[in-house]
Image (cartoon, helix red, strand yellow):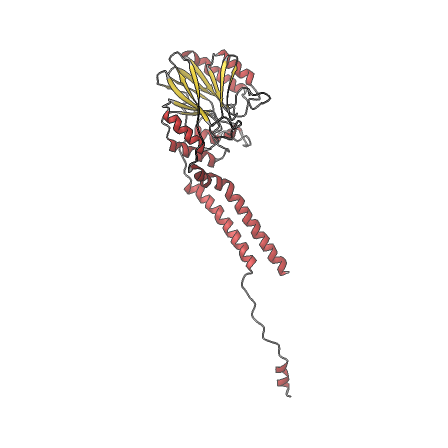
Length: 343
């Protein structure tokens, strides 16, 4: 046997070229990263292009509106962005032919730009042709904001000043901001000056705020925590006709120092008393300034607003970031798995 034939007999089998295809787990990781980036990019595009910027709805602050008594107005509170309920209430209010609407706060569920845009968008569709006069609730402000100017920024940009007065027919209306469950000395000074200047010119005077001065329910304290006695002294001194508030998610009537206090928190928030239906107040001021208040119950009706809310607010705000985080975590897990296998 020759040397050449001996070498041929012991030759190694040919080596196959390496498989340069990316391992399956690595490809899954890249897909997860790509989908997460795409979701976050789509959310950004939505904010910039798709989401509209509805017009603010401002009260007639500092205005004397022409009108005649008797007239009717509606009071709502604690809608919390639940337009499935609140839109139905708004339709009933429009049918009542009121001259104005008071909202006693907690208009949005959370103090975010998306939430405010959603409510303004929906109220624009409702199309009130009368003044919509709101005050901020505790859900409408951002107490974690870095400075005082930012606490009420979104509210003020959407619904105007947090405190103000206006007049209609024979009635003075005053909106007071106690969204932090208190009033300051500055708040009381403003209220005292405002009532001192204007109260004598009108037969009736109505004040609306978010937190009631006290919680009339036994062993409950969902009300103002600071300044309530001082507030009631100012209201008593100027012979205020009645106070409207919410914060408590039911309907209650209280009276302090002879001043009736109507608490209506049933315009969409989860109810404290399930037996009390969603509702609003229909109020009348007669020519002599006497006030009558009627509670109007409204049945909850499902509509397409829930799905619009999910697409416009809930999913972009609550769905996209967590889903993107899960995809990134899954991608990192798959990457780590592949590297451990390689070693």
